[in-house]
Length: 135
Image (cartoon, rainbow, N blue to C red; front, side):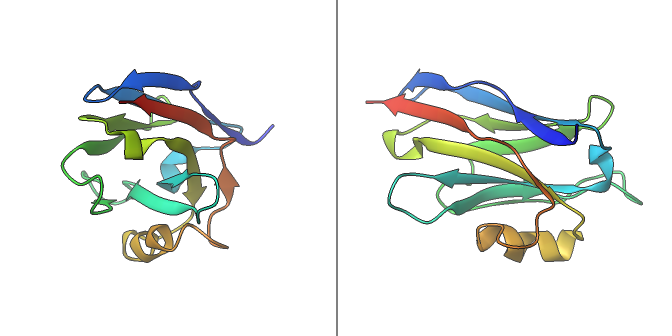
């Protein structure tokens, strides 16, 4: 079965850290750019950050939204078919359901796609993991 599987829900105190994983099953994630998105009830899904594939390169390109820049980091381990979202200095406003999504996108295209909430361009979506940051 082709799917993206995210690690489970978490409750974290403000100022704490958390790493969420996104593992591909049934396909090779190394061919895909991966975006992370956050959604809270009543609001549009927003792009948090993304990482390019590493085809033809020794480094991946990353992008982060202004609200998480410097606090979040995205990395990938293609040998494990997994992408990680490391979240630090967490704030209550970081709470929400986090989704990973994979798309056959170039590094240039993945950034505006992620900024736009990943609409239409991503091939696979995870089921989401609920992150709650308590104050």
